[in-house]
Amino acid sequence: MANPTDAFEVPEEVRAFAEKGVLQARDNYAKFKEAAQDGNGAIEAVFNAATKGAHAYSTKLLDFGQANTNAGFDFLQALVGAKSLSDATELWSAHARNQFGTFAAQAKELTELTQKIAVETAQPIRTGASKLFQPVA
Image 1 (cartoon, rainbow, N blue to C red):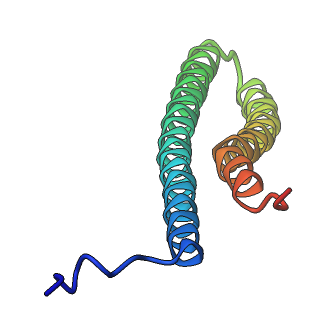
Image 2 (cartoon, rainbow, N blue to C red):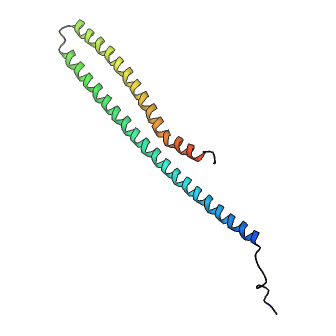
């Protein structure tokens, strides 16, 4: 009597279908792996840009603090040298106007820097999203 497993043969269509399924699974896995690696790279780029931006912002704040402190000391030195109350009042008014303009310029500069940091931090996300959602050829 013949062994029942000897007579069993997988039809060619089934074998071809299975091979095609395996190839598609490998291709999909490769695409998924690449997308995951790109995503990790994008996250790393976002954190690097955010860190760089935070450093630039804090450096700018320190620079402004130093400049404002120096302006305050210069004002006090000039105020001590005032010869009359009217000279002191004039110095005070001039300093107040100058500092108001300085603060406005500093606020504008910080706003522009914040916008630049936001754009640079979001760029890796936009780049990654455009790669991820490209039309399939």
